[in-house]
Length: 354
Image (cartoon, rainbow, N blue to C red; front, side, top):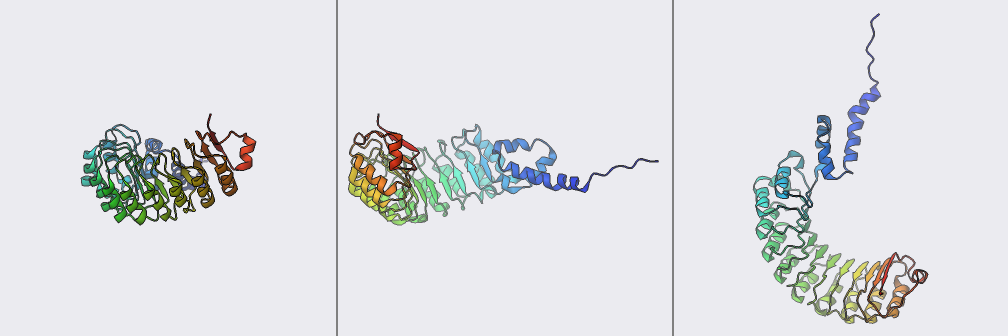
């Protein structure tokens, strides 16, 4: 009597052919891109499964990598990266203008759906490279080029004219840009939601006022370490009805009058007033009364504030404040944890002078 070959149950076959690939796709979305690349080497079957799932290949992450320029060109030449939406080159090494020019000439198809580009710390990139990359990324929404002293107003002009959909722009540390760049931004991106101008030291009230008068959709504005600005700019911030995040650290010319105008921004949840040395209780009280959704407030280094502003903050913002920094505020007394929680029940972080 001949033995019959036992066929695998149908459920097992279905599991192998359908369920396992789907499980692998779900799991793969949770692992870092570098580990995802390693998974491609496990087996031809896994390679085919993963490369056939486009959502896995929307991001190119070369953060802090060496030879990032060559890696970027090689990756965007692959079919699986034809629909990449995010490229991260933050502090990557060996990325220069020439690499971005190659992308423009040979890999432009892969960049047509790019929405986010991070060039933070890529100090070998100049206006020339910015022109090349932005000419191929018309759908770009997020652009960040922190700590680049080679990019000038010309480079920013290329960004705003080539990429009409920018809503998040980080120019922190770009010390060579001037009011001309802000004029271009204001003219082309009135739907801008986030703008970081930290340490852009050439900017003046004139440039900022153009932004504030035209970009009324701003939700986040970072003016850290722009000590030359005056109340002409700070009063104009009141024209931003959607503002939630505001960093004015080092605003040496900000007065109580200017801060009282900012208090009209009712939706502010995070406010950094560190080293705003002209501010007193008057300005902070205005903020407390106007910005009743406040969660984060830093008064670091302000000697002109006292316990009075803390009491008013407690009256209007006790149910929202979670972080309060009064380090260096010698007019504010020490309090026990229980005393602080009586004033601010949701407080998680409180910094006080030594």
